[in-house]
Image (cartoon, rainbow, N blue to C red; front, side, top):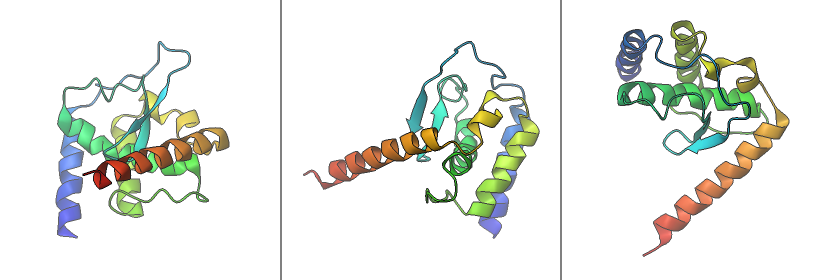
Length: 138
């Protein structure tokens, strides 16, 4: 409980300090979706997260993009959680309040989509397999 409170407070402060730093529109008509290994989730190349030099904001957004992935893949696919479902959802909602116009919150990137969900699940499966293979190599 106290760990969640401390983490949530740190994320809230990070969001406040970094308002307006994320892109609100895309110059790319067909941005690529990319796997983010630390969160096990996906970002689109035009969302500006990988270009940030602020590692605190990137770390805070791991909860956001992971929860967003649960929205995109739907409840039939179990993608797990970063902390807990309710914690991840609270951070997602907090981010939406502080970055309401961020391109990553566009409805098409936060709603169930069977085509994108299937692609995400295939990419995650391959990434998990590669990671396990790397761990098992001696």
